[in-house]
Every structure is written in C-alpha cells, then in structure tokens.
Image (cartoon, rainbow, N blue to C red):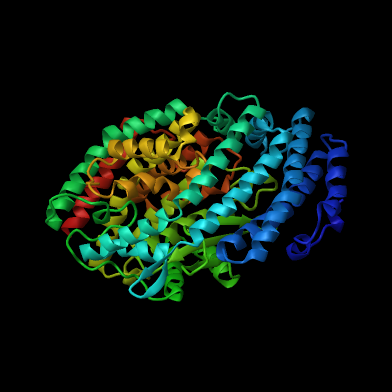
Length: 574
C-alpha cells in the first residue's frame, strides 16, 4: 500500500486530501489480524509521519517568518483541508486497533494513551480545532510583530527584554517599561484571540460530554498517572518549600544591590542582573560561536549526544538567531518522516541563550534516542508523556553545566562559569513559583470560565497568584504591566495546561543531577536508557529508568531544593 507514497517530503507537502484518501481508506478497511498487525501499524505510522512532518514544516515556517503571508496561507490551508481529515483518520485507526484487542510489541502503554484519546474524540470538534490552530497562528503573528524603538533602532521584543540583565538599573527599568508598553498596545488584539479560544475550548469539552474544559483536556493529554488535585498539592509544596528559599535569596540580592525594594527589573523570571553589579555575562558574539561551544559541551557530556548535535548542524536543523518577523520563544519540533528534530530559538548573546540551546538540545536527543522504535512510541506528541519529555531537556542543562568553562570547550572563565551555574540554579528555583502561578492560573480559568471571559477578571486572578508565589517584588506604579503579563505567556493561549510538566520534570532533572554528582557516567547512561524507551513505559517507570522518583510532594521537593541552595551558596563564595 505505502510503496507508492512519495519518498520526498517536499512532494508530499503538495498533496491534497483527495490524493491521500485512498491510502487512508485502505488502512481503515484492511483486515486486522495477529499476522497483519505489524505491517498495518508500520503503514499507519508512515502515513502519519508524512502528514505530521508536512504540518510541522509549514507551522515552523509561520514562526521563522511571521511576515510571510503566503506561508501563513499555506499553513492555514493545510490546517483546514488536511488536518481535520488526518485527525479523524487517526481516531478511526485507533478505534480499529483497540477493538481488535491486539497489542503489537511495545504498544501496551501507547494503547493506554490511545484509549484515553479515543474517549474524548468527537468529529464535530475537528473544525473547532482548526479554528484554534488559526487563532494560535494569529497570536504568534501578533507576538512576532512586537517591535520596540530602542536607542534609535527598531528591536524585537526578545532583544529588548535581554537588557533586563544589564548592570545599569536605569537601563533595566527602561527595557521593562518599553517592552511592556509595546505589549500593552496589543492587549486588545490578544484579548480577542483569548476570548475566541476560550469559547471554542468550552464547546469542544461540551461536545465530548464533559462539564468543563479542564477535565476534557486532562483526558486529551492522557494524564493517567496524576490528578488535578496532585497539581494543587504541588502548588502547596512549592509555597511551603521553595518560596521561603527564594525569599532568602531575594533578600540577599536586595542587600547586595543596595536596594530598598526589589522591582521586576531587578530579578525577572528568566533574565536577572548580577547582584554584585558585574556586567551581564556575554558568552558569545556570533551564532557560529554559540553552535561551536555548545557542540563541545555536548561532546563532553557524551560523544554520541554530541554526534546528534553535529547532524543537526550539518543538516540545517537549527534556527537560533533573533530577528525581525520571527516568532518569540524557543522550541524543538519533530520532522517524523525524516526522523529528525528541529530547534528554534531567539539568541541575542546572553547566558539564557546557552541554557535554551542546552535545553532544546536535550529534547532533540530524546527524539534521536527513541527514533529506533517502530511505531508511535518515539514521538513527543503522540507517544512520550510531556512530564518526561521535559526531564530530557532540563537534565541536559544540569549535565552540561560542568563543561561551561573554556578549558572544557565551553564559554567562560572559571569565575564566570561558577557565576553562570549559580544563576542557572537560582533561576531554576525561581521557576517553580512562576510555574505554580501559570498552572494555578489555568486551573482557575477553566474552573471559572464565565469570569475568565472577562480579561480584566483574568488580570485579577493572575495578580493574586503573583502575590502568593512571588511575594518579594514591589509592583508600585507598574501594576498594569504585571496584571497583563499572562498574555505574553504563550502556553496559556496556545497550549492550555502544558506548563506543570516543566515543574515536575525539573524535579526529576535535579534528581538526575544529584546522581551525576556521585557517578557522572552512570547517571548519563541511565538518562540515555530512559530516553530510549520513548513512550513504551509508564510515567513512573520512565522516571525509575532514569534512576529517579516521579513525585512532587514537599519531602521530595525539599531534598532537591536543599541541594540547589547549598550549591548556590558554595558557588557564590568562589
């Protein structure tokens, strides 16, 4: 059946659904037996990989060039004309496999996920999902168009935000006010996208027989190993364990900087100035430098992992620099037919760019390590639980940290590397409270949908959570910037409920790092073994394969946080 499918992804991207339909219909009609199931699964996987890569390539282009109207048109056309049919086909084939009672090798856990996804699938939701895809692209376009006049030049939002690491407080304040001021101009446009998305998501949940979107989304994400109540417990553990540590670190920062109060531009979520008033770290001047030194770090962590990164460099699978008409943020996506990952970032020459590339490199290595699996188990979006996907990336940030010095192939002197590591760990600790804000905010949204339709009420809820989990900041006179900031957290609009995974994964990653302090080679071996399992194991079993626990109670969190704080204190003293 599949022998006449195109062998070139570029050719397949031009196919209409009428050309794809015969292959889809044949798969749906083919008898399924113990003897035929492996071939059937391979054919389904091939067709799905072609469709998935075509879609991802078109979507990538909307982020690499947000001003290309033709590219947006091609993406919208594929979203409207191909993807609803493809999603409906996947559901039909899932139902066929589930009804057969057959379990191909390595598919027991993926079948568990398929059952959950099949339970929520409704054909009438496909047009609604297409509308959401279009709204997501519109949101990316709005974000990508945010430009700021800075010192006589037009700069992107990420380029200006990078100035929050400047040693001059007046520059940091100017950067914050300029960036937020630019974003505020798009407030109403983002509000319109938000309300339209919320309406569509509520309708999808009702169509599937759910009382609220949270319960629908939980099943759609196949969150089978933990509950919304567990997330609330995690929030409480963060408030109990992490917030007091951050208060100590922030108080030390305030005293070191000689400030009366901390403002957001003194310790932003992911870019902070040096509290000792040293100039911001400048790890590289060019993208080529970023690639070269990161390559050398990966080589030191593990030669095979370094080899994966070299493939990406050689095959043009990295788009790293920030530029006008490029979407903000960073991601790794998969080209599943080519069996290659692709990394997108907005590097501007700061240490966060190094961390981002290490992070996204970990995602890419996960895909490479699992690519040997025959069916869907190697796919981030269809096989591997997101809560473990982020372990691969966050652990790589920590595993790469010992090689940040120039003598190890990295970017820095010994002193600057110690500083970078302390900043990384401080940022990781600071992330947990911010993660709790984002996740708790989403739980509030979908528990209070009527109120969430009013963006001003969303502002109120967001502000309350900021004060609960980030109590050390003085927002006097800039409350509006704080209240509106949820609109710039893309996960809230584009990937609802996808954020707590980062917090859970970070806890797993710190445990891997703790193991590496005792046995670096053994920890990396366990890490790679766990990545190679793809989606063939349950979430607790994936964590166990990596030598760590899937848990997010206060005691487990405390063990990780104590190690992090002690290491920060040691590095600060060096």
